[in-house]
Image (tube, rainbow, N blue to C red; front, side, top):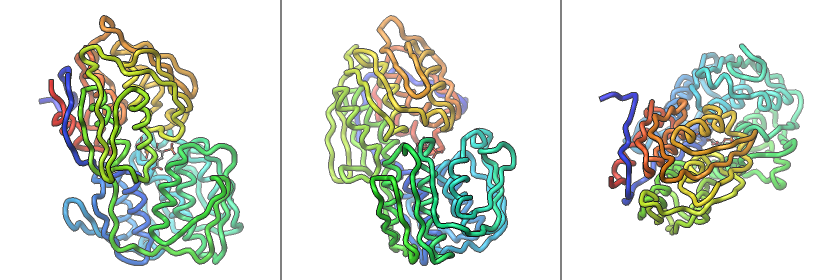
Length: 439
Ligand SMILES: O=C(O)C1=C[C@@H](OP(=O)(O)O)[C@@H](O)[C@H](O)C1
Ligand SMILES: C=C(OP(=O)(O)O)C(=O)O
């Protein structure tokens, strides 16, 4: 068996019930909040994947104690805003949710650190975050290219308590300032005011950040995402025990299987009260004709049989709020009854790969006509006689691998190269997939 490629059989139906892996976005935030808090936190249903391992290893290198309780739960011993190790080199792979928040936390906490990642991480911009942090006196230098990792952090010299930050490249920059803000408050005894310059993308991720900070005792008000104020006496207090929701972006692939393979497919771990913006993806499934039902802790999809030639309905949708789940919608478009347009997906250009370029390339390989611009794509459905067998290059992007696995419900033989890239957020994706499908 060759681990570097995975041959998918053409699939007719999908049906079943699964429990989702934990949310990457929530897991990495909670790990950091727990490490910064004043006490022990038991984190239950945490995601074990490459991105969370990167965060855990970085925290351990910084002297934070993390203990495995069992295969679903860990204990983090908080260090009360003061990591014991003051000098180290941290390798952070391609984990945006580790690199950006740790940049902010360490540059405010102080110490001497080098932060680096894989080559692609060194092409992902960080300038807007570094500029924002330097306004309050952080000391951060670029080690290769201006505006990009790797970076070197030294002790700050606080000068000011106002930050202006741009939010049009990534919301993770604002998330990072928010998560690290209370350390600034504690060290300076001053409030921190944060102003957003221009547009802010991916807003639901800011809501996740604020929601989780509140569970650790820091409640931040904002004025319609324009101005945030963190008060001088803010401190993170551990809630003791915390549960992590299933990953709503990961759910998008499985719910799509129900929508195109008749279903029902039910995912446990997210439900109607989820704090993750990506559950909005169910609206796309609705627009495309699938039926969705929600429980407190589950979502279920039922749909049509695209393998027998039935068509989903086409969409024209603004994906600014759900850039990750948008990748799934791009692949569903090949089964639609007309061209589908994805608008406002410019952030795709600076993620795991240039996702507009990569997605266009891979969809064209299987026979789709695709046109794209700087921040949009139009995908034409593949007619019965146009399907081509293809080996999908996954560009080391977990979402390309998972989204394109849905193409196997069509007429071609799909081979996925480097399927292990799903380890970033969903290590057993292809096992779950195989358990849901009926060839
Ligand atoms: O804050 C987060 O957890 C994330 C924010 C989003 O990034 P952008 O804000 O860069 O769009 C998303 O794509 C990423 O997977 C996770
Ligand atoms: C953009 C993503 O990851 P990161 O957290 O590295 O930005 C993603 O998971 O789709």
